[in-house]
Length: 114
Length: 116
Image 1 (tube, rainbow over the protein chains, first blue to last red):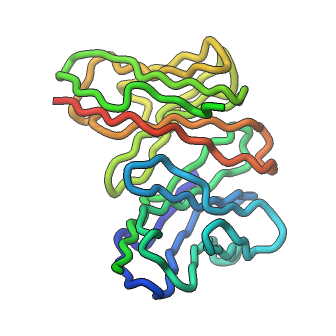
Image 2: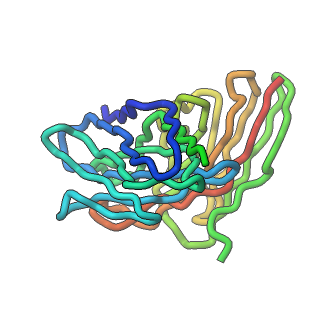
């Protein structure tokens, strides 16, 4: 069965610090990988996604993620965080089944101090 | 274009009561999903549907039922509410079957349910 593990549950950073959130998945086949963000009181929104091609994908708001197949990882990065990046971040994986369903990680709460 | 609409936004139930969480999408998406979100647990898939008339269980289906009589609507039913069902429920939809397609989920704004 597919699963997703996010290593950091709660991260606190100061503005301008660099961010890296870990994500590992377990699935042996072809995967599609996603990072979603949930700002306080809002629904989940797509940050970025990987389907194929360049393993370094760029998303909105300066976020990027690197797919490393050999490590089953899809870590999220941002060189310099802002207070407005305070949110919960979810990594998700979709396998090659035709159901389209995503399996989510536990989430990482990011708090950016001004 | 409203996207995915969930009602109600908030609800408090007593143990043993029943209710239906409504979800409607106007994007003509075939695929619809119900997730619950609990602190520290991420999102867990309850049920999903790949088209009208077709539903299937997700990771945590116990205590819930769904139906999909139309493409637009995917209601989630709680028959005998229990405190363990206190959660935030998100409905989502997606247009495509093929996982190679660029098809992220579109989420509704959620329903916060408390069972006491």
